[in-house]
Image (cartoon, rainbow, N blue to C red; front, top):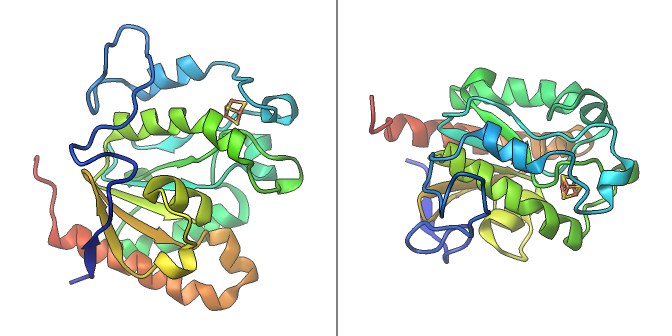
Length: 220
Ligand code: SF4
């Protein structure tokens, strides 16, 4: 059995309620009430932060809207910015091969980033950019309402677990936060340059697979 521990309330509070964005036609929406298309429509041609000026494409997210497992990365890189889709190119290929370790296929999961527009020269996203963009991610999470959130890298981990700690310290175990089981781990792109992190990322993916096998879906 993978180790699991209860962390302090974070993305969701003890009742599993997250801060709610106003979505037309909804009033304090419940989990899975709003579709991803409705969230995307609110995002529109967003220019809430400076990254809206420099992006080629806004990268919303892709995958199964009813996924049990949602992956959250940092932000679009060059290829993602050009193609408008997260995790294409080398990082995407590495992610695909890692999914199999958890018994998952790409079509099983949903993938989004903390920020939807590429920071120039792939610099780190700034706190004000994360603050501007994260309400959209929160609504994506509420729409999908996955059982498991895999946080790829520091920015996703720190957003979801509301912590200052880095992924190196936090990885290797699962955290229960409200409704969600959270797996902080390395970003696949980081393992291209830090090859010694790859076995740790692989181990974390197997841990997610073991949790999924031990906790089958409640609904048929
Ligand atoms: S990064 Fe997010 S908040 Fe900033 S312009 Fe893009 S979509 Fe809007």
